[in-house]
Amino acid sequence: MEPARGGCRVALAGEYPAPSVTLTFYNTLTRRPEPFTPAEPGKVRMYHCGPTVYRRPHVGNFRAFLFADLLRRVLERRGFEVQQVMNVTDVGHFTQEDEDRGEDRMEMESRLTGKDPWQISREITELFESDMARLRAKKPMVRPRATDHIPEMLQMVDTLLAKGVAYRAGAGGQNIYFSVNAFDRYGELSGNRVEALEAGARIEVNPEKKHPADFALWKSDPKHIMKWKSQFGEHGFPGWHIECSAMARKYLGDTLDIHTGGEDLVFPHHECEVAQSEAATGRTFVRTWMHVQFLKVDGGKMSKSLGNVYSIDDVVARGFEPRHLRFLLLRAHYRAPLNFTWDAMTDAKGAIDRLASFLWDVKSCVIKGAAPGVDEAIAKARAGFDAGLDDDLNTAAATAAIFELVTDVRAKAGAPMKLSRAQAEAISQLLDEFDAVFDILTPEPLSDVERTEVESLVAERQSARARADYARADEIRKILTEKRVIVEDSKDGVRWRRM
Image (tube, rainbow, N blue to C red; front, side):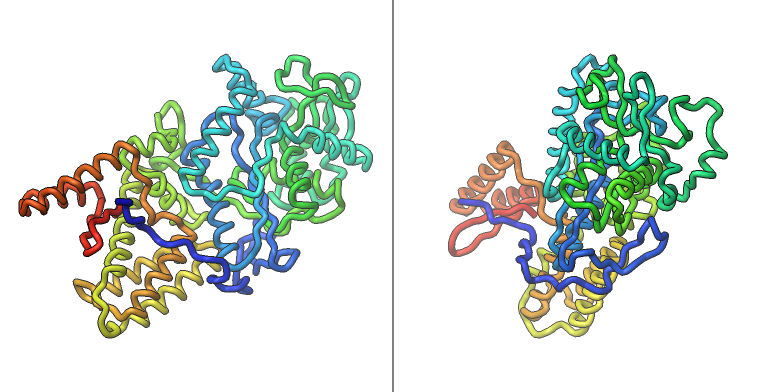
């Protein structure tokens, strides 16, 4: 018999409220929370800086990537149509902020591993997409790769040259730089004004630059492995910043409603994106900037030497599911500190188990008259959940409201739980909405080996019951419970489901 499917149902379109006038986001550009209203009513265009695919992303990277997924889900919950783009950087990202002194990360990894950088890019991109699926992130509308958009980058470089905000340098003029002095709003996003950058500039600067803060749009180097023939020469490759501007414009237009990334990207990457995009189009590039705080590991930075650069496989090897990591990374406010530890992972798993157990008890409750005080607890939890998400995606407040509901209902409805049908349905609906945002309550599917083992135990239990060996049947039920499998006996036969 087919196993019964557990977990919350997926809410249908139209079940959630219309776009909320109370939805508020903190805007890095203005340094204050602002009511969110997209440029086009009902439609949100947002872009997220994705991975540089030279090494497999680690748990720290996924805080920013899952924030993008959370943001999309909250916007969709509020009735917006979301056009979401998250790029893949597979060329041009250097190991230092100043691209004139560092090494392209793709070519660095190629040198260290002996692999072709194109092969590295393909392999890591596949791993990233697999990891994101395991973490239950929705696929973006498009996930553009930088190397597929060289023509768009070159077109933007030509535009910037024609407008006099970029200049050619180096032998034959094959290196193209953006002139920060030609864009008077440079520094508004990060607070790093040109005058301050000039005063704090290093003594040793690239002599090709007119100003130390000028940044490369296009570079040339015959020794570079990843290179393209262009109007500027035979051996060119893009600067890191031009990639996102070109890809965002192609898929989302001149002006984005939201742009996100880690806090480390505010300067120079996002500052440079603003300058080159607005200089090219003459329009506002991004209306709302949102940045995620770093994830700490064991109270500090991740380091290979410390052995604490963890992938999803490391998390699973410790006995956790990817959804446990998802909840850990989402339950704290995105602008608040968050520390990854294995104890924190255990706490996240325990919280999910507590919520899943509560949901099961609600769905299995004794239907009686309304339990006193439960209606008020549901209304309070819903108000707290909505208010938390609407207040700059305050997931800490939103989840606290839900777990307070668990405590209140258990105290008021007794054990076994006694609720009216309306109360049980209202609680289930609220938890459905919670899970549509956080997506943590449905367990991972069983492997083929696990499924075969469970079905064998269920068949053995049926056989034991048929010969009246109830002791063995109870023993098998206990074994299945330890495996987080629930067996349901009914007049129609026996079914089982994941807890």
